[in-house]
Length: 74
Image 1: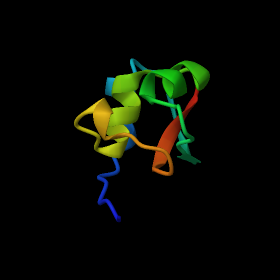
Image 2 (image 1 turned 60 degrees about the horizontal axis):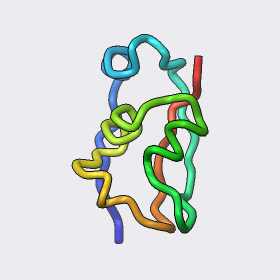
Image 3 (image 1 turned 45 degrees about the vertical axis):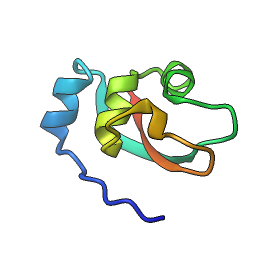
């Protein structure tokens, strides 16, 4: 399944990340048993930042094999 995502500009990312956004992201494939909370903690960001960056309306919509963009920590 292909999903269309809206990429934000640096100003938008800086606003939702509380200034912690560096302007860089990396692609990550969700593994079995992972969720946004685990990923946010692991990569030093927040659930809301990952969700917003990837156009995720509900954390229930995250599944193993899904490709996410994760912001790099400042």
